[in-house]
Length: 76
Image (cartoon, rainbow, N blue to C red; front, side):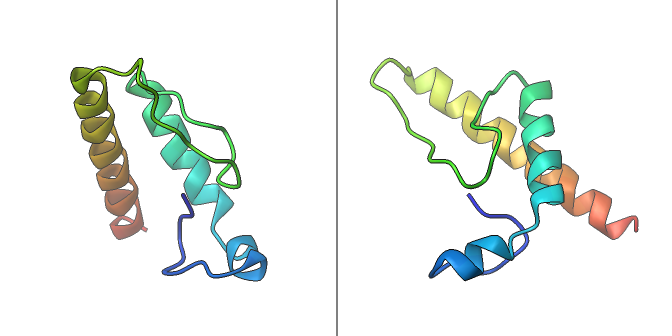
């Protein structure tokens, strides 16, 4: 997941992603009990061990964390 850019088509695009925003997103998920890889340059996977409830909780945490990022941007 790359934050702060609209599209990633190559490594140069990926390097333009906002690592500060990704860090805030990562910390927002940690605060909500969701652990993802700590770098936006790593892959994320869903496992068969994840229940439907786990996935729904993750989706909700992602939405909340992204909403927090948007709110922070508006307050700057």
